[in-house]
Amino acid sequence: MADDYYATLGVDRKADDKAMKKAYRKLAQQYHPDRNPGDKQAEERFKKIAEAYAVLSDPEKRRQYDQFGDSGFHQRFSQEDIFRNADFSDLFGSFGGEDLFSQLFGGRVGRADFGRQRPLKGQDYSMQIHIPLRLAVTGGERRIEYQHEGRSEQLKVRIPAGVASGAKLRVAGKGGPGPAGGKPGDLLLQIEVDADPLFRREGNDLLVHVAISYSEICLGSSVEVPTLDQPKRVKVPAGLQPGQKIRLRGFGVPASGRRAAGDLYAVIDVKVPRVLSTAQQELLEKLREAGL
Image (cartoon, rainbow, N blue to C red):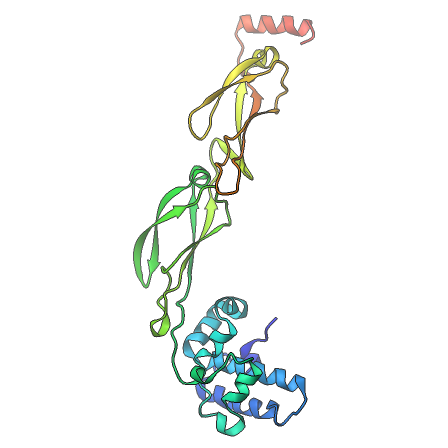
């Protein structure tokens, strides 16, 4: 786990450039490898101090570090990115030069990194979108509205078939502008799938409840089962127990790439009438007498 850059330099989070540079000079001189020959701990501390100053002395990097925190910042910036715009030019005379930094950081910090501004990728935006289950299962297009640089914009997004809640879609180039002419950031969409009145999803399978009468479940029958496309009539074998499932192979989440199609399971429920006619009541009385 990386150290907090402010704590590494021993400065307040509101410290200005002057205070930052003063703290860096003092610590870098204290832990400089020439003053601590053979001391690996001092060398590691010196490297951490240099990294902290490289980030906090750059207004854009400091802003992103403050916004995203240590973990989020390091997801966006490699060590090469961290040192790319670092300016140690007026500090070298006191305690070392570019060759030392290049040596300590494996050649990733070179002469070009200490005087030339290089573009950085812009900030990524993120937002949550809700989509219906049917769109998540079958895929398709969804138009969204989002705030981009202070103005409202509409965007058509392609939803891949089979996407589930928690998935993230990346829309390239729809984030913040890149500093110094860099590439714009991306828009990250976190998917939340809304509940469906008919279908429930379990992995790549779908479940739907279908109700039939007591006589149909006892004697066997057929029932119309809703699917994502057209209803399909299936046989209900005699003696099927309430809550048991009938499998419709391949009628679940559609196949995509290496993923095979899921199945649809019709969960059989028994309809119990709230009110009986006289004839129905008499018949049921006879069935009860017969042990049913």
